[in-house]
Image 1 (cartoon, one colour):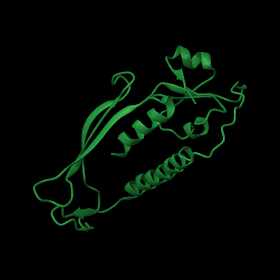
Image 2: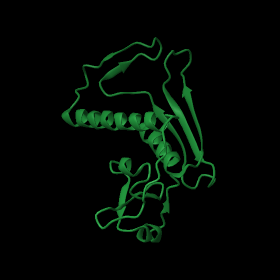
Image 3: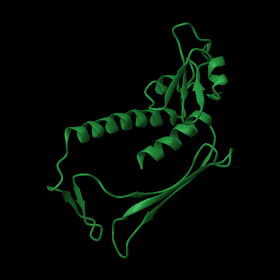
Image 4: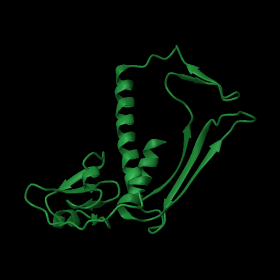
Length: 171
């Protein structure tokens, strides 16, 4: 579920465009806990060219037994969590904290916008998002956050980014 949420969030933040988004829980009979969710999304301005998906995400977690009927859950002793799973979980929590901080900062309505020089020097690079095809220049709002994106692509100049089919972020 998280990759889809991040993809939509990145797209909206980087383009300023809109996305129709629906998440519907799917229950089995009278169960108290959903078996999963159906997630649907489509970018509005380009009629789904950048964002378009319809997926089912199961409500499961490694190492946890869920009783969907009663809502109870407990550790599943038959599943051993490996170091690799722990590292993935650690990476998830690190990214989630960064994402939450970005959300909290961007939702603060009392922030003051500061116009900065967006010309780049030889040591500064243009940062692009390979999924949304949006690039950021040093000094733009999400430039620093882009440095940790899994979709990061760097360019030597805006001209190079435009030649690769990217467009400049609105903010």
